[in-house]
Amino acid sequence: GGDWYDAFPLPDGRIGLAIGDVQGHNIEAAAFMGQVRAGLRALAFATGEPGELLARTNDLLLSLGSELFATCTFIRLDPATGAMESARAGHIPFVWATADGKSGVVDDEGGPPLGIQRGIDYPVTRHRLTTGGLFVLLTDGVVEGPSLAVEDGLEQVTRLAGIAAVAGLESHALAAAVIKGAESVGHEDDAAVLVVGLDGPARP
Image 1 (cartoon, one colour):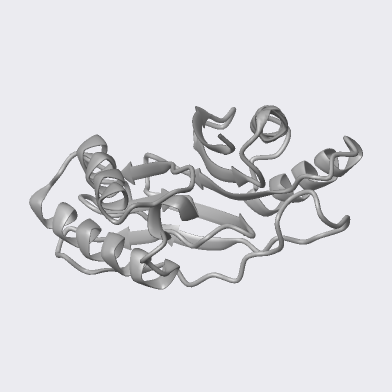
Image 2 (cartoon, rainbow, N blue to C red):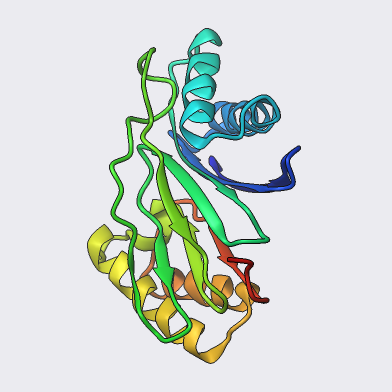
């Protein structure tokens, strides 16, 4: 399929986190997904700033001449402080939760999908990952199905993330629970989930 996620260290010690969804479900889409993922990772070593990275990746994909496009969210995380920066290219917003049980959907501006139009600026939003808190990045196949609207699916994941944060559920267990929830409503699209958590106390 065309859904993917990635996590890798950046040269300055921060961590790059990405999730994306390529249009289509055939071999061409899978190949394009590989190009998106490889291009984004390579360009991240030249600039880890999320907005600039998505803009450069967008221009790279357009230069390939493909008719496909991709949605993507990229996050740059400082694991020492919990400081995060994110940019979104046509992708669904991600979910947050704190250790005291508060949860919600990140409200950010975002920009158009990658591979459609040149010269796009992608706004950057800043967040902070607190101890015991988490962010859940996902593709629309997780929260949308024949009997489930995206908004309702995001609400379900938001509730689940809040419960998981209070219970101290490990990231992989929450990801499995989110996928199981998607399967229970009969989702038909590809699906990917990436859970980001902070176990120890962050530096101020």
